[in-house]
Image 1 (spheres, rainbow, N blue to C red):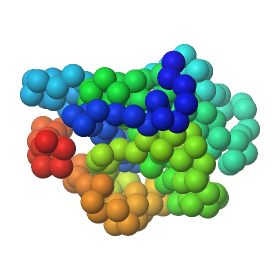
Image 2: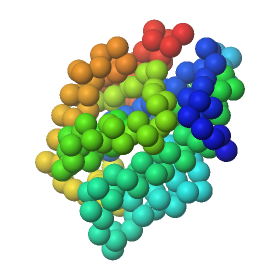
Image 3: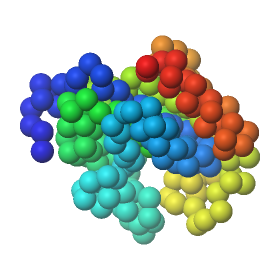
Image 4: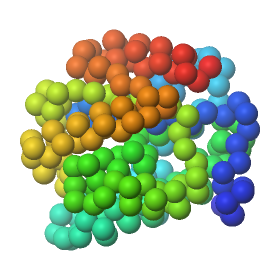
Length: 216
């Protein structure tokens, strides 16, 4: 495992870090693998991960955060658990891959914390951002793709039992969407908003076009 700020934040010039974000039901998880396959077809070495997850510690924390509803988590506890999983993900997966010159695609990252526990929750987004700087050791995505969709349409796409966050209701989902759009508006050079209301092929094409424009 990488150790120390300098080793964690180091990356080669040809490495890229891309994050897909969006409310639940936006289709982002379905697009992550397709983007990875397309990039491999372009000759890139690609690592795909999800946040939280992709490490033993992250997977264990994910179970608590999303599926252990009998555990009542305070808002700050929830946020810090996400940060702990993310710190391990950065140390074990993301930072080493970037140092090797690989492309990393993550299904969620720090923006999700800022939106879910900040804009749509009860915590100050700027506090979350500052804690995130510690958890990520300063590693930031080159590109954040927001898959934007009306919350009502997104809810219809979820055909499984809702997890802890998904079950918080329509008003929460509307606040999530608004939070993502606010983050995108605040950093237009790093964020690209993708219309996720159309079919999977059209959305995938828009994602590939954005990556080609901003990362090649």
